[in-house]
Length: 325
Ligand SMILES: C[S@@+](CC[C@H](N)C(=O)[O-])C[C@H]1O[C@@H](n2cnc3c(N)ncnc32)[C@H](O)[C@@H]1O
Image (cartoon, rainbow, N blue to C red; front, side, top):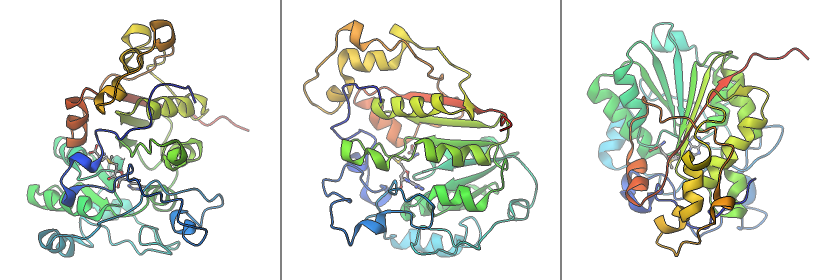
């Protein structure tokens, strides 16, 4: 990974600045999910996959307030998918599947948003695009309940919510090429070096996304964490399954990464003393950042990040045709 001045302080988009009831777990929590001894570690791993990898989330304070519990009970089996779980309450039972045309009552393009939080982006997109079906995947129950509540209130018939671990949902609930777009906006940054391995976007995860997208399918990402943006760009550029329609764009002085490094905006946004780099070291000559996706609603996370001076990185990649072996 390209080294850069980032990564030891919390991100403005973390729940520290959100209301506790609607906040997802805090990846910047000082307690170390990997340091609780050999007996505890397996709870944080996907055991059923061939390669065990750490989970990208730790669920805390997952209780529902009474109004969300009522929404939950009413929506379960309708907007809120009733997914039988396996070994963890976020896994997907191995023999479970969903017939999506039957679920939505029609055959339409499906967009999947992973880590939808309280669902601001997916709800707005679904309202604007009634011709498309949307699946929001979120492990944080209060966030899922908040989205289910909005979906019911607004009468959106084209949204379903899956409370489950996203890699397992992709693997088990979709056939190859069944999803037209996958969106991941502001995934948990896991900024401490020892926690970087929990980041959702890595080479293994990309193959799961690539499998569910057809040729020409779109993978959209956004983050306010420059170190994670660089990691996303690196793994996606290295993948033979994706191409970047914005390759080379927003480079040099137009790159948000140059700006972040030049003024050490990550540190500034966290109230730390900045350690700016000289232009020749700060300059991001690769670029490849996408323009802001016009269909991406500005969530509370993004607003808070912008308010403290962070830069937003959008990335858009296209699923390539599979090359014959
Ligand atoms: C920083 S929040 C961003 C929420 C939302 N996208 C937004 O912009 O407001 C990241 C979300 O991803 C969820 N998440 C993390 N790992 C996940 C996984 N493996 N499967 C489903 N959701 C996950 C977290 O619970 C959290 O709500």
